[in-house]
Amino acid sequence: MEEKEYDVAILGAGPGGYPTAIKLAQNGKKVALIEAKDIGGTCLNRGCIPTKTLIANAEVLHHVKAAHEYGIVAKDVKIDFGYMTKQKDEIVHKLQKSLEGLVRANRIDLFCGFGKFTSPNTLKVIGKDNALIRANSIVIATGSEPKEIPAFAFDGKYIHSSTSILQLERLPKKMAIVGGGVIGCEFASLYAELGVEVSLIEALDRLLPLECETLSNFLTKSFQKRGIHLQIGALVSQIQKNEGGISVLLKDGKKIDADLALVAIGRSLNIADIGLEKAGVVTDKGMIPVDECMQTNVAGIYAIGDITAKAMYAHVATHQGFVAASHILNEEERLHMDYDAIPGVIFTHPEIGTVGMNLEQALKRGYSAKRASYPLSALGKAQAAKETEGFAQVVIDTETGQILGAQIVGADASSLISCMTYAIANELTIECITDTIHAHPTLAESWMEASFIARGIPLHFPPVVKKS
Ligand code: NAI
Image 1 (tube, rainbow, N blue to C red):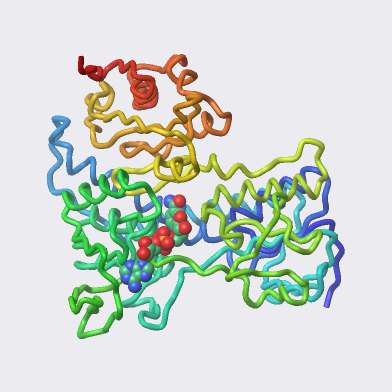
Image 2 (image 1 turned 120 degrees about the vertical axis):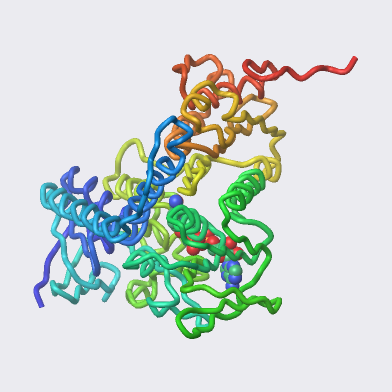
């Protein structure tokens, strides 16, 4: 087997691994990037990009269905699902090709195969490429897979994971979705828009149990209005196959029949079978603990992305990779992770954007905090665009005025949350927001309006009348 020497080897070419490789290569390091499946990882091939392509199609359909509200007559609207899925695959393929080109342009050596530690500084790659790679530093960025449990094992036909559901060739009439977390809610929203009768089943007492209650409640009402059948506080104990479909059995004895089921109950981290024991890397409850430089217990071995179980977002993995690279490069001004300024976006309709703490979290952490919300319906731009569903809210430290968190539901929440991400990452106060000139008419004005309310001097909102 061919033996090769590198400064850094990176295991996994997802949104954690490949940006880390680029940063290191741009700073003169000789880098090996090892990938068992497709370059781009879950995000590009089985996650963010294919799902957001389908969601973008559903969003167009949503507007076409509402065309009459804009004085436009759209008759005989039909869905060509085959075209949608083909176009999704083409977009993924195009991005894969450009990513491969980017890796080559940065003179990174890409190895296609499954990599495994054979010692703390050696990885054996088996697959299309076979090699023994020796490196001074190794970054583990192996990501995660949909969690599978025996009671409803995936079969890719009737019981789907978030990966296999992307290969559906035609739309079912009825779909049952197990798990009302981020993935369950995004798919429920997508398929309901495409005309599928969706039942969404969540074991805990609300949708999106990890988000604040105001967001959960808003999405629940919005989903109910759109005809999504919600079973909240309902534990799925089994999924049975029957003639032509499935029955989802709930613990309380209820049964939901559908053509197929999507199971989205979390993700399992890819840390088995990569020879961590040969490297001496310690794991804890299925994840890899890391220090503030993303270094594991073994000097020179780093872990980034989902396997660190910090926050399962592509953008977190990327930044963690930059932090690890900064340490490997021994940069004078080291990058660090600010877990209090992580944006999160949920691509439901309406979209949800969050950053920093919600009110409950801020109070729990001992802040004297309060929350101020502004309804999008009060904005001129929202009225003009007929995008009035939703609200923007800020959570502030009442002692200093510092913005601790922000949440938004509504059109383009995914982009709008970045305004508050800059604010929180730079420790701005609400005065900074109200003193900034916001372009009019825009949905971004909702941040300024919510901040005026937080200061007790609302602008386009009735003042609070003090009782005498
Ligand atoms: P999740 O942990 O967010 O939600 C899973 C839900 O399933 C939980 O609410 C849980 O209570 C429920 N559940 C578990 N067992 C159940 C049962 N037997 N019956 C009924 N309900 C049950 O996991 P999810 O949605 O699979 O997402 C995985 C990760 O991927 C998350 O960390 C998420 O942040 C990330 N992700 C992020 C996206 C984004 O940023 N837009 C998109 C997709 C995934």
